[in-house]
Length: 623
Image (cartoon, rainbow, N blue to C red; front, side):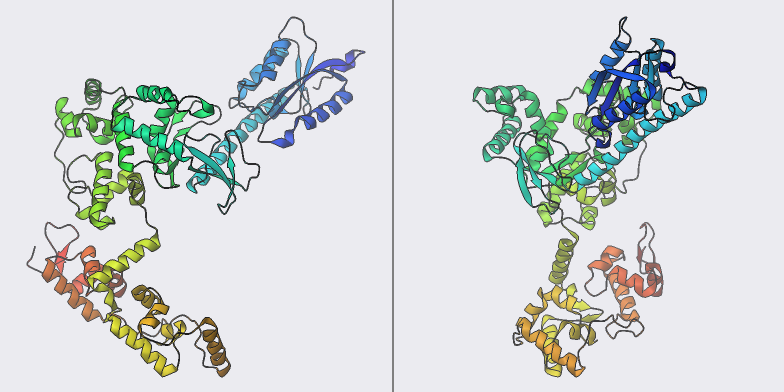
């Protein structure tokens, strides 16, 4: 049943209107709401005598909505100036995650004799049972809209952070925000509190003035080398007149933020904490952080890591409390291991335990626990802390100039590459955390080519050895035979390697022509000659090689099998890495393509599985 309060009185009913507009949804502007409410009031006999407006306020809770708080206070007062509350719809009353909260505030008003009227809803001020059900569904939908929007915004912001764009208005001391277009062309240096005006514009972080960067480097020196506390560093900088935010001295909290921020080593970090739907701020595990290498490190990476180690040691955990927590965990679970310690809420991380006792096994001995023997395969039979892994990666990079999965597996002071990927996410992520350069796929391919060329294995193309002199002689022969030499002719003649191989060996086809002492030709001369060949019908166009006809440059199966037996005799075993390193054999991928699988190739070569070597094959009698 619908009630019209104006039907029983001669004068209009006094009403207060409540208007709310969130900053995310401008279609619910206060002017639009006011116009809709005024039309409803004129049609149903209400007179708006008071307005309560929450502009730019979220409807997730009552916090921060001063107008609604004042409206509820005035509604529950002994003397009030209105007898009804007019709201546009259920979502303007609030998008509470608990729909009962919205119903509770409405119930308080109705209990005080004030009816809440939703002007934009079909039920208006109806209080029938079916209307109550519909109104509850509307409240649930309003809250669900905010939850879904929060998830979408969080995903979008994280994707933008992965691309290197800053999320948030504030930035650390010593750094600045720059407004850029989608192509990363700088447009404007943003000041504190400034925001972008266009959605297409983005924000990146760059190092600030040199004098502020010098202060950051000095803070790290005082903290790491001089071993001063954060409070003493703040006091010293304050005495010297060093200014921070808003021309005020650098506080201890700011200095702590500088020491712990990865911006100091050129990395933007996002998603360290989560704060959704006005809930509490929660810390995310490091595996969920988003990192982006934005610029060159401001402080040395090694110095930054030392600062993190000291900050880590400054926490409340000491040997006594760690020992007590491990004893409780052992009593509760009956055993101890790294995974159990990491998942326990009342115990520190395995990293903290290893830092205080030297290793997890030393901590186990302190609490009287002897772990069962484990196989040393995979991680060399010991616990590897994150700090030890990163230090080992830096040492391996300094010795070789690059890092690969194969180098990590062969390294005696590092765990297996699978262990590194499992605990640090991936090899590029581990190298990034260690402060080492992360190469692109093209750069990695270039280095592989250089190493194969230095080892002599790069001289083989589809089973045929091509020295530099032989390659250049082939160019001269093509030039002499056809009167010209082009990339398409090189790719389609079937007797020489492709243009890609020439570029890999000499850097480019132009450099190969120069080394072959062929006459230089300009771009216009090449184009004019191609036009003439097209008119004469002799132009060789770019096309795919005929896959039905076998190429004369393919590997012969008997040569591959003979090479596998020779490799097994020399090394005592055969593996994928050994095949890839052998200069007289194609890659393991080519062997698989030739025979269908490595196992079939080993069987045809007369190789057998070796005892004591998982997934290793060799000659019979060598196990």
